[in-house]
Image (cartoon, rainbow, N blue to C red):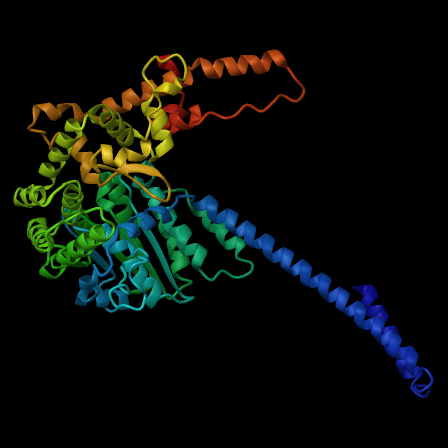
Length: 546
């Protein structure tokens, strides 16, 4: 830079001295000016490149700090729920006075939507799927949910949105710290942080010690930098009571300490957290119920859309066109506001082979979810899928996070004290697992993870309040603690396979400078142990059993 300034001064003095001889030296000045311009361009380009590199480095550092705050995958459950949604449902919510006032910031800062099992709370919160059969120009398609409503109508540089979907089969998502840190990380990634924002993120990181108060302070710091902060949480009733209380307490403190109506919170759950909500938000909150005439009227819309889709895909085959309307009427009347119930009945009708069977089925529909699940278990037994269904149910229930289809295939092939891997025991046709389990288990089409169709299925199989009343179905019901123990024994057996011991010995004996890379097993022993045993594995407790 000093050389550049000196050169500029020299050229300026030379220009004054040679003013009278400008004609004679014109060509030389042109040549000199061209060189001078090239120097400026080169210097400018160099500085621009340095600025770009510096900006990219700051961005990477900021991203690394954000990831260190929370690495929880908050998008996958949102995508899963969106794929289940039927277009056009959920509009009743946006037309209520409570919601209109809440989203506009003119009502109570907290809005709670409660409903019974299977009434569509999560789907209502998440959003709509892209349906190639319905064009975007139709009003029927242009319907959204709470997350989409905020994103499309309220999103601005000074308006932030954080959302969290509690997953009953993902242990991490049930913890209060995970929920609050994810909310902080999402909000912070959207906030308008200045170029020197790294110190701000580092300060938040230092102050966060996972205590509710420190997390509230972090959220307050972010809320002060925006006009509105929307927070949407679904399924809080799935958390253990202490975790639920911590989340509600933190949100209550945030609302009380933030600027009036600068933080707006939407919570959807079952009725079971009613007392906790009242204790946390003593100033009150607005409330909506899914068991309203407006909400339940959408069951008909859902049934009509699902039946039409099944007919179009030829999953449901009907000879008499009049039967279609009979099916729709029977399911709408029997659903009692439960989308989940209707979904199971539609799947069952698709398995019928003639109009007579379909008519018999709709005349004898199960009265509730418990009877629905019992009938599904009877069909599993009748089709001789009982053994594989039992093993899958236990693994899916005991795993610390959802297993992929291939992981589940490997896991159910192993027996306690099995000495080595046996490829002949691997299940053929694992892609049919949903069909074998009568849709009590479902496989996500994008991530290929296997999950219970709904948290109520897991509770039906594992909790005592759902007695089978059918002795032949006892084999499907299990205690979760016993399932954990069973999975632990399988993990220990897997870790002691001769395959791994032999491989290690062979590498030691060869002692080659560049040993050949051995192909990794389909499922790493450490992965399967951690995914199923969590803290017990990390603390080394399993070795006491060997």
